[in-house]
Length: 398
Image (tube, rainbow, N blue to C red):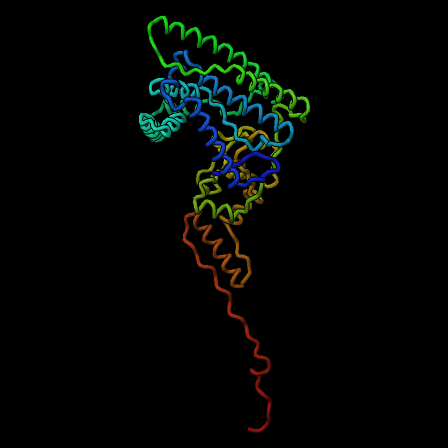
């Protein structure tokens, strides 16, 4: 799967640069989590008992930093958010999944991400948590299709992409300002809750390790800087229309190239039939959709989505589809697929290269139809003119 870093101009870093960037950001984020005490299961579990709100404050800070930075850079045309994958919303399964994650969090004192931090910090109980994560993931993957109500829950929901700028009708920069102010109020409230709960614990006679660091100046400075950044970006940046459709021009894919990709089982391939003629195309794993405005729910970053349409079909509907995959239009539409791959006609080129190409097309047609491959007819032997050599001379006498 391709990893992209959405810096304009597009492709400035390439896949290798994107991978390196992700590695550096991940290492820095992991270091920040460890320094914040997220390798300590007791500190993490304390969040649920409300006497240590570090988890809430650190993660909320991470959200507003990422949100404010991205929207500010988008306003200044430094980032193309059209290249950022946004998860579709499946509300019911996401609520259930979040609840189960919370149950596992409070029981173990660790979530999957902090379990890695804790393991690197030398705590072996994190290894047990990670084994549980892997076993649970495998059990779910193997059993989801076999348990009807789990399968129904897993696929329930609209699967649409929902964002606050679109829902609220605000620009991203102004929304970042509002969320930063909400975070400021939430931090003040969290400090009050921490103080109240710690007093109750002391009165009850419990003596728990207090690792709360009360550095109000640093917290308020971060929030203030983000508010200022958001205001500057909203005032000086270019207009970003919330919910505006992103124009996309799909690339193209030749029928023979598609056939080769299907035969070699390219894992990034995702075939979408918009022609209504899927049964005649003899393509495996073909996803037929009736309404092009509704994107298929299974699209993921790095996928190559091939659109099988009638010739000259407009692709304006792609503006509402997810940003992560790359979109390709089958050259010449489904008729070209049928004529080029399923029902090829001899080219009439009797050169060695021409006969090899005809043979390859015959093999492709046989693969998709299940028929036997017929060898290409050999070129007829050349007719050699004999000139006058074959004519008898007229002569007299015997």
